[in-house]
Picture 1 (cartoon, one colour):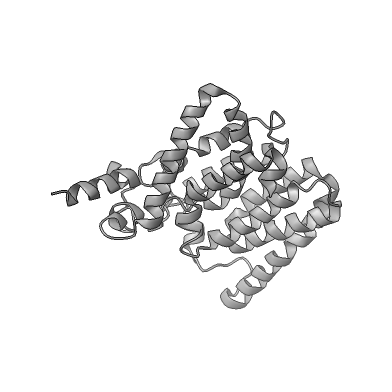
Picture 2 (cartoon, one colour):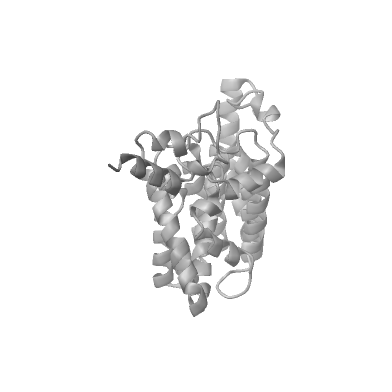
Length: 296
């Protein structure tokens, strides 16, 4: 719905198909019931509200607030992305900010009450000391790994998202609305934060899950970037190639659940022996090796 309002039904449909079939939406968000799933749902609701220019400010603010609040309640670290939505709303509908704050407070306060009751402090969580001591990876290394490592690189697994990145870099131009600017900045900040986490590769997930709650933003930006890129004939072939790689990689992560592909790719060697930089952990490489080993 958000993409359709920005670029029309044709490009919105194409971008939605690529978003679902060519990114970690299926392999991570739709499978293991991580809390990233609830966060992505909340941010999707917020994006839908941002594009409803015909709605009164209070309704837009409440929808954005509930979506952002749900995301933060699912994963408190998503407050980084929530700040981007606050900036986007300030640019798009400044009169809705107060409504957003009030609506977002409800799910967040419920989380605070739960943590107080269960863990004895409103700021405590189930991570214990890890929540404060787990930030040990050098940021450049973690960022490069999240984007380009064979086992977890988001842009290596889903290169079609480069089209979304291009759209986020052009706020207020072409199909990209002005409010892409704060959302893009929040994504960059979120990338640096998650790159600092000691297990930035995300354990035994089927692909990159540590950035997965940012996928709704990238999905809407993909629609805008796709419309702009398709107007240039020279870019059509690269976009199609990126889309094909993204879909085949996502399919391998989503449906290749049997050994040894699970060990080679999805677990990236496991918690005790992570191998995200091993070329053999790229899903397409692992699938090729698996098929080659079965050949007579």
